[in-house]
Length: 361
Image 1: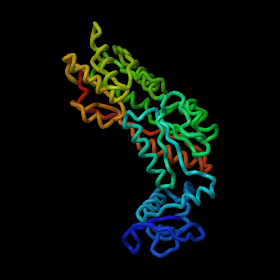
Image 2: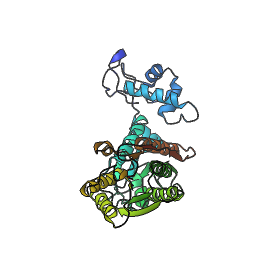
Image 3: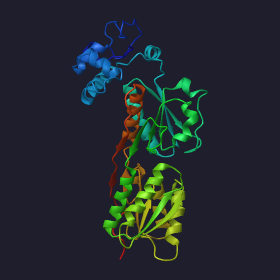
Image 4: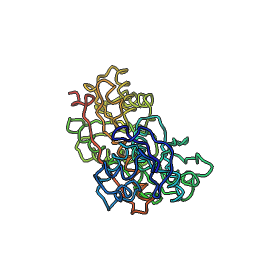
């Protein structure tokens, strides 16, 4: 396998082309081989082959696999992708489809997926669908000729028919777990996140609550709306108003202004479907000469960098986007290796900050 080395322990900093020995290791002096990786990791060459060949699951522990990958990174050891692709009939390339690149959430998903892919000799092509959550066009003349599989975040499987090329394995992230077209799903516990927001506001004493609901027809936002309404519906004396809004600061501001300016008892808390909308809600409160959180509390979803850039800092639900991307890539590789697909649900966490407080008397 082609490899570059580390400067220490007699291994040069950069790899050079040379002859390839049976089994794929470089034989010229000073270049890292699987034997070098095994020595640094303290395991056998067979274990190195299992881990770097993506066949370790059920044979070695996750801890051992990570030790081998770390040793390979340290030595700059990389597989000969051209030879492996010919041997396996694969391109070792995955397509990650996202609705847009307008928030850092999808960038973090890509970071997690690309990190795991790099450890296993895969490449990841990031494709923001020009139709948002609608049907995605095939970015290549033939997806089947260019890809081994597709990972899609926050989209419907039916929107990916063209991209999948009619037969590529599909792993869905933050999407409907009951979609039969997906080989595996990786989801966040979105419903629990909405329940945590509801419980937090109820504990503070809020009873007049408004939901700034994303005007996007996707599974993740439908789950948030249902879970919030269900959690608040069990408490006495609670009124919940829903106001649709686009996923932007300006749309969030307009929706919040409509809610806060309506005649009658004003909501004491605004629950926003993402942090960007929540920033707009905070802006609306200032324009109406209301104080956050003294006059109105505001919550978000995602825990973007924006959440701690606003003042007061935003109470929000942290979504581990990098972990989602990493789990999605591991699921795709498992499917490609013929292993039984396993659906995954990752926990989320409410982060109370300065944008929420008890309602005014």
